[in-house]
Length: 632
Image 1 (cartoon, one colour):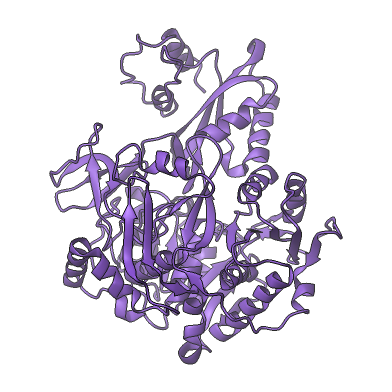
Image 2 (cartoon, rainbow, N blue to C red):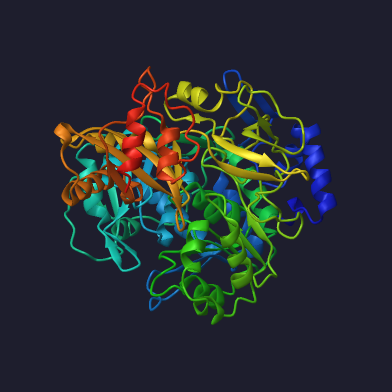
């Protein structure tokens, strides 16, 4: 796939210009480098009024033939995935393209044996074991739509996602290892399935060998199912616009949004962006530390690297186990060349002695990357100095679940990186800045609301089962533009810096968390009247959650109630959504129409009370002083 790689800054400028002047010609030429069962009739058809986008219209393909089959003749014995277990005493596994192809086909036959067919939705709730990536690819092999749910989510959150997609099969494990913890995944899944009538079969992978309950009507062991099949499974031919997967992301209001990604455009863009941002070369060892439960894992552990014929690393554990040198121990052992992680992890590791890094040989590293949130300057320099030894470009990648692939980022060693800036858009991406009234800011140096004014191949096509919500969330605020919900500034050289969310979503440790679902969970407590949740700066997580809570009959703040609230949120959504701080208040600042003024609450939570603006127009201006006086 080196034919689609940009090799110089002049190449980038030419590619970018061509992609803007004639997007169909540009993406058509890129797509020619993939395997198609039938070539497309039109590269692009779109109407952002509806909104509707179609790429490579009429094209037929199967993404797994591009990930696996086409590499067998030339790279069959090359390692496709290196799996690194949670416990360093357990053996690392190297799986070749030939073996991965065999295992994917075998498990695809397991799915077919269990009545899964093209178009069916399969929920995957698994730890970071090899079988998770095999399950994802097996679904794609037979045209089933995978919905991976991060294994840190609660039973309630899992049930909501299964029911929204009406999944018929659940793939899970007896448990999962993560640092010192063992997660009882099967128990959590059993609790979820009490509310999930659509599930007809649960296939359980044996990882921890812990004791679990068993429902003989629907449960079956993964290894027992594999004994019933062979590894001959021709790929289902898919339309370019057929659904590939659904992945849920938090919204500012209501239930999570099931973002729908389709086969053709997603494949082309995930691969193109992987190749160019990381400048992957033959024999490189690439490691993205994300979980496949997030879009980063979909695009840049599984599909992008495997379509490129790369060697990609999967890690089951955490950066702090058995000590804070685990990332760097793995980098030395596996001779990692490209390393892609979250600013949260970098900030956490930077708090510990530098010996955890310096004792390892990181001389094979060529490229460093960050993902999930903007990286602050202190963390950027720590990463550059200690890990990259001032010798590795750092790609600070801005993108979302909804975008499917990296949108704004430097290309390693090709375009200049700049601390705290995502820098320049990838070819085919047309970002602009808007003022509060939706007018484009045409000066190069500007700050405003980020929007994208033209389709790109990996754009999510809809929210599963709710296209009207898709339109309202992403295309209504600024007609004929995709609105990602972020603000940005642009410097005199055209580099973009993401300045944060402009809606009620908080990015905590790189994960988008809608505040409304968290508030709904808190309000379920029998002692709580109302709550408001905002983000505030946190030196490790980037942002943390601050909950303002009103109790019935002025129930006094106490440790038990605080713990009950956190437990309720963890049970309803997951541990990642637990508020770091909970303040019991007598009221919340509201407009006369009843809207909670979260802007004021954010400033108070952030200890930024010098400029709260005019509070006299509030329904209850006195409550602002009360909240400040009683602040934690």
